[in-house]
Amino acid sequence: MAYLKGLDLPYNSMLSNASNYGGTRALSSIKYIVVHYTANNGDTDTGNGSYFGRTAVGAGAHMFVDEDSCTQSVPFTRIAYHCETRGMEFKCDCRNANSIGVEMCSDKVNGQYVITRQTMLNTVKVVKYLMQQYNIPADRVIRHYDVCGKLCPEPWVRVPQEWQEFKRLIAEPEKKEDVEVVETIKITVNGKEIKADAIIKDGRTFLNLRSLENAGFKVGYDNVTKMRSLDNEKKCISLILQDKRSADYIREGNVNAVNIDGYNYMPVRDVCAIMGSTDIDYDKTREEIIVKG
Ligand SMILES: [Zn+2]
Image (tube, rainbow, N blue to C red; front, side, top):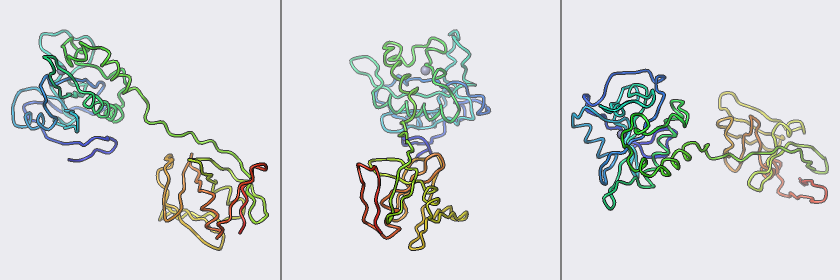
C-alpha cells in the first residue's frame, strides 16, 4: 500500500496483463475521464487488479476504486480498452485513446447494482486527482453511457441524481483557505509606539515581520538554510518557511509563523518572547497592544 502525492486515498499499483491494454500515448492527449462500474457484487480494487494482472481478457481500465483504496492497472501513458463498446454509436469525441477509464467496484442489493456512498466518495477523490494532474475540466468527466450509450455505470444511469451529485462533488473547489485580512495595528513596546501590519488568525494576532523590521527589529534570511530570523539583539529565533502560498503554520521550537502572499507573520506572543517579555496587554478602547519589557 502506498500513497500518491495529492491523492488522499491508499493507492496500489498492479500492472495489467499486457494483452489487456494498447499502445503508448502522450499524457497531453488525455481529454476525458470516463467513469464505469464493474457490474460485480462486492468486488475490490485489488481483486480486480489481480484478476486483470493474470487474465488476458482484452479489456480493462486504468483505475479501480472501492470503499477503502484504489488500484492502478494500466499506466496513464498507455491506452486502456474501456469505453469503445462494439456495436454502439459514439455520442461524443471521447475514445479510449484520449481518455482515462475509472472503474467503480459495485454491490448487488435486492437484485439491483449499487455504488456505495464510500466508493462514490473515493471515486470523487481519484477523479479530482486525475482532473488536477491532466488538466481535465469537470464537464469532460463523463459516464461510459455518455460515450456510447452503454448502461454503465448502470446505477448512475438508472438514478441520474446520483450521477448529478457526483458531478457536483468533483466540481467543488478544494477546501477553502481562510481569507486573511491584513490590518494595521498599533503596538506599544516599552512605551514606544509602533505600527505593524497584522492578521488575526484562529483568535491570535500575527505581526508582519517586515513591519517589525521597520520598527527596528533585525530580520534576516539565510539563503542556504531557507531560514528567516528575527533579532532584537537580545534573542534570535529562526523560522523554517515552506511553500510561499501556504497559509499553514510553520513550527520551529515554540515559534509559529504563517506565510500569507509572500509575507511572513508571527504571533505577537512570540515576538514578546523574543524580546524576553511575557507582559502583554490589549487596550480595547485604544485598540492597542501593549508590551512591557
Ligand atoms: Zn463501462
